[in-house]
Image 1 (cartoon, rainbow, N blue to C red):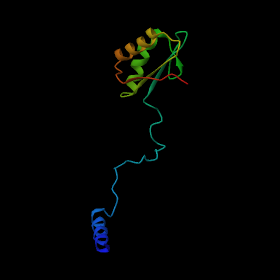
Image 2: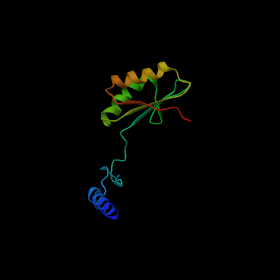
Image 3: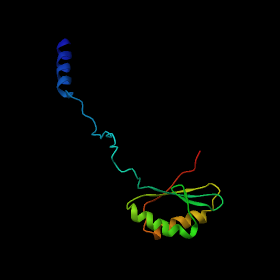
Image 4: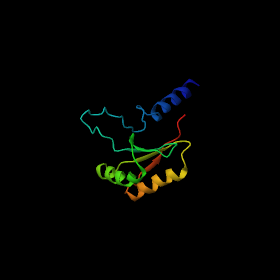
Length: 115
């Protein structure tokens, strides 16, 4: 009986690898302070009373297309985030999305409602 146990122990010691293997992962590196200070992201907020702002700067609806063209030229590859107020009309949010598409911004995301 002891012979069988010793043989099993030797077999298990051979089968089980000596070092553990895991998944390859990438650890985030600390950011460099000299990196870009200006973010590529654009946040357009649509308020309750049809007010409009781009990155916290108030903008008129007539200037939206021109401003988005300027910003997309300065920040190519940026993402446009649309933050619609819970009481804002969907038509206004859709108008912002359509204007962004016309300005050449194709990466668009909708921000979730705030809790």
